[in-house]
Each structure stands twice: as structure tokens, then as C-alpha cells.
Length: 265
Image (tube, rainbow, N blue to C red; front, side):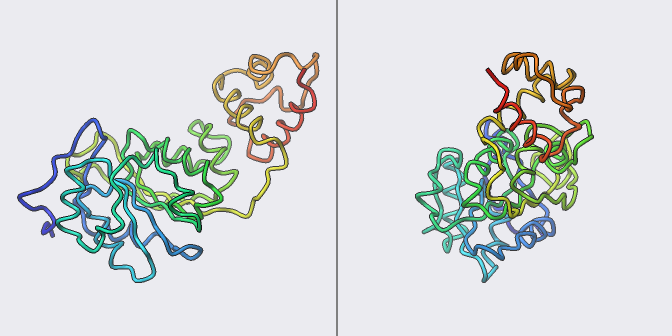
């Protein structure tokens, strides 16, 4: 079913990381994956030619907004999805003031441009009190990294920071052939739902610094990685110092952060 590909089709732009989904069934599955049970407003990031937009607009339980940076795509969406026009925001999602636009909360959904997918998740973290749910299609390796538990090679900074605040589900893998142009890698759809954590129980800025320091030198023992970032803690030792970053879960990183707060010079 290719009735969405018209003669005025938008050219995918490499510099915007655009790979347009062409498979209607996958588009419908992604749109249906958003539960929207805590918030009825959704913002689609990078709708492109609207293949996902079509199914999101059909949902009567959602008020859909969309953020699109590409003027050619904006013109296409105005022409083909006039009902979206009042809520179509032309501009860069990463520069939007979500608090001002969506003070009562917003779910985020989209076939995320690959070159900014990690930045989208960091923006979600910054607005975690506003964003109860995220459904995103990203490169498979990014999806695996975010969803992996401790102990895996893929587990990293984004895994810990997102898992601190969200329950994460890897929903399904998407092959290269359903995009125009086909990306060089497989994709995957993941869902993040805000967990019940309101406070981590440590200084969150130091928590982020500890996590980043530990993974920035992930081949080293945590002792060496943290001393490089914070000094030598007066020679103090923590039981986790002989472990590597990927061996610690969120709760262990919180414990380690509290120790760093108490022992740094």
C-alpha cells in the first residue's frame, strides 16, 4: 500500500538523518504502541511525510502535535494532513521549550532521526516530570543500549540515566528494507514509561558525573575512573572500586554517588 508516496514526495535529506518509513503495517504498530494512559497529548518528532502521523491522527484518544525541522516536509504535511496544521510546529525539537508549550505533560513519539536520537533521549531526561511515555524508532544498537540490563557490553551512560527514571521495553526489530533510503543498520522500536521514582536519594548532578566518569573509562576499574574525575578521596575505598562500570545497576550508582558526595575533597 503505497498511496502515501505522491509525485510531490519529499526527498530524504542525509544531513537531517532522514530515512522515511514506507511500511504501513509497521507505522500502525508504532502508533498503536503508545499507551497514552497517563497523558492524552502526544508530540511526534520528525514526521517527514506523515506515514506514522496518519495512524496517530486516527486515534481518538490523542491530541497530536508534530515538530518538523525540514521546510519541504512541513509544506508536504500542510498539504496532505490539513487537520494537523494548527498543531504542526516548524522547528528543531531539541530547541523547543516543552515546559512552555506542554505545561500539563506530553508523550513523545516518532521515527527519530538517527543523528539526534541520543540527544532526544537526553532532552526527555531533562523533562522527565513532563514526559510520562516515549515510543521511538531508533538504530537497533541504540535501542539495545538503552534497554540492556547491567552486565552487558552495550550497557552504558544512557542505559543508567534512562533506567533511573523510566521502565524500558524493547518492542520489536525493524529491517532496513522498509525505509527510503534504506539505512545501513537495523532499527528497533522501544517504549519508555515513567517509573515511580521521584528522588534518587543523592545529588543528581553528582550522580550524572559519576555515571559519565565511570563509563568514559569503562575498561578501567571504577576506582581509577572516579579518581580521574574527583580526586583520590583522601585514599578512601569503596567496595565497588574493584568493579567496572557496566557491572553496576542504578541502585549501586546511587550508593556510589552518596559515597562520593561524602568523601570527595
